[in-house]
Amino acid sequence: MSIWAKDVLGGRAAVAGIGATEFSKDSGRSELKLAVEAVRAALDDAGLSPADVDGMVTFTMDTSPEITVAQAAGIGELSFYSRVHYGGGAACATVQQAALAVAAGVAEVVVCYRAFNERSGRRFGSGVQHREPSAEGAALGWSLPFGLLTPASWVAMAAQRYLYAYGLTPEAFGHVAVSGRRYAATNPAAYFHGRPITLAEHAASRWIAEPLRLLDCCQETDGGQAIVVTGVERARDLRRPPAVILAAAQGAGRAQEQMTSFYRDDITGLPETGVVARQLWRTSGLGPADIDVAIIYDHFTPFVLMQLEEFGFCGSGEAAAFVAADELPLNTHGGQLGEAYLHGMNGIAEAVRQLRGTSVNQTQGAARALVTAGTGVPTSALLLGVDGV
Image (tube, rainbow, N blue to C red; front, side, top):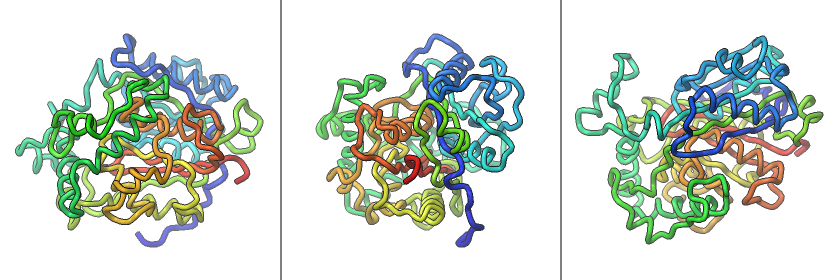
């Protein structure tokens, strides 16, 4: 679509609380317990109680249903509950769903959450081992027989074409890997805390699916993260400064598949991200130059470059130089490469910390933050701002 109805969402809801478990490789407890811990931590951060919550949103992939988490966390009646599909692409959309519910008056306090034992339990990185028949899954029949069984192998196809089209080498991806681990090195919550890497170390790490190396790939993490969304007026009276939701968007491109959209005319970009970018800039009246810090979904380094280009921070094929020049603070928590892989929810929390002024890698004067969600899949994004900007 080239024309949308007027968006009246911006400025009506805010993130009032964030909370997480520790990030580990072996949590030693159930995914439900992780979800409840994160939800309670987020409510405590906001200065709210379980009794204040009347809405919940999560991912279709989460094993802990909204009503089950509500019961276990001591939450009472719910007037709104929702789930968003497409893995990490759902991250910012959970907050969008919450904001829509608040703006429409069907809920007052909505908690978004994601919790899993993604390392000690099911490992997403191990790829497709069994899948029930479905129309959506049929598209994988064009890829799986040829050995494209894992997310890394699906991304590698587009990454290889990107390098060829712009005359680049895999070092282009190394700049993203180094930047993320540099921020992670000073973040006590990060897996790569105290362990920055160099371009040489990136280049020496083993191949996973050429041109992707080990250090081009995100973590496999056990943990949970929750986000509390409420109206701006109510958020102003709570414990923390509100992070106002300036704009929120979802997007799927033409010929979209989950992560195997190889039959498009051009696979050197991310059209679904372009759909989201156009919505965000149009509805907010902002542009790339207005963003102080960006939390870019980094399950794999190549798609960070493509997202920066789709959002207009630089031209096609120019993002590696943009990252290398440190033109914009990116993934200041260390990202999913360096901190933890929580399907992007920990990135939303970092954007909130930046706007509060409490990040361990604080960007001076940060007033507006862009957060993106999973790429290669139907996706979503947020623009967050400090109150009054």
